[in-house]
Length: 232
Ligand SMILES: *Cc1c(COP(=O)(O)O)cnc(C)c1O
Image 1: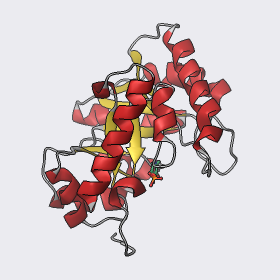
Image 2 (image 1 turned 90 degrees about the vertical axis):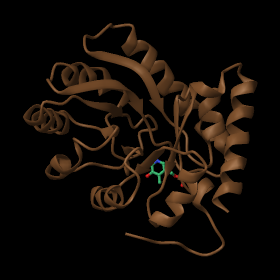
Image 3 (image 1 turned 90 degrees about the horizontal axis):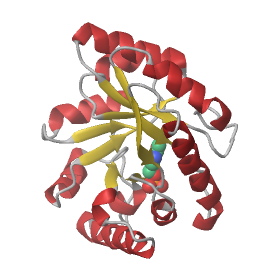
C-alpha cells in the first residue's frame, strides 16, 4: 500500500520537475508520518525513504527511539519553547521557526551542546489568521535577527499553504514565498542561505515544485489506506 502510494508520488514529482526543466534530485521528499505507527513508517523506509516529518515533539521522540538511526527527522509543526531541549540535538531540520524568542531558545540549547541547528523560517504567506508563521513583511527582519544568534543556521523558508480543493489556488502563495527567498538571498546576510524552500503537501506538491520547492512535505498521499490509522 505505502509502496504503491510512493510510486504514485514519485511519478508526480518526476512529471512536475520535467514540466519546468528541473532535475528530480533538486527536490527532497519528506514523508510526513504523523499519526502513523512505526510499522508503517518502516514500509516507507524499506522503499528507500530517509526523510520523515513529524509535527509533535512527543510523538517524534517516541518514534526516534524505535526507528533506524539513519532517519533524518524534520520537525514541521509548531514548536513550543519549553520543548526545544528535547529535540535540538536529534533533528535534521526544524521547519517552523516563527519568532525570535523561539530562535533564541534554539540558540541557547544548541550552544549548551556545542552544536549548530539548521532551521527554516516559517512564513504565513497567505496571511491566514489560523496559521503560525511570520508575515511576509517581517520575514527579512526575523531571518536577519536569527542569523546573528550562535548555534543556529537559517537555511531557507517554509510555508503551509491553505487547504484547498484546487491546487492552482495556492500557486500565487508559492510564487510569493519563492520571490521572498530571492529577495532575502540578495541581501547576503551572514550565516544564512536561502537554499531550501519547504512548500507543497499532498494536494499541491506538484504546483509547489513548478514554483521552486526544494522540499515537499507529503503525508496523506504516502500513508493513506482504507482504514483509519492513528498512533501517538
Ligand atoms: C500534516 C502536514 C503535512 C502533510 O499534509 P498532507 O496533506 O497529509 O500531505 C505537511 N506539512 C505540515 C506542516 C503538516 O502538519
